[in-house]
Length: 114
Image (cartoon, rainbow, N blue to C red):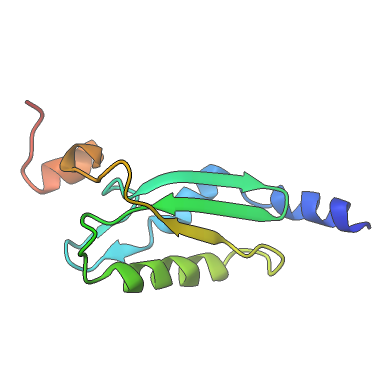
């Protein structure tokens, strides 16, 4: 199998939804909810031999940011083939706000739509 064929085979082993499901295992320790439900994951791009995740924190001053990014790497390392090294990008645009949370998480915090 050539390198290109190997990378293509690796890329087929996981898709965006599977990555998001893995990221649901990463909990923001300050609020006790997963980073996907909180709306912290902005983009997941899966390409042959490549995985890019753009995510944010609830605030640039979040004291748990490094730990959460480390937890993302650890969760992905448990399931990704060794050939895929995820590129985790911490971004601040657009700024996170509570409207980005899924409905169940909003309800958990007692926030209802206006």
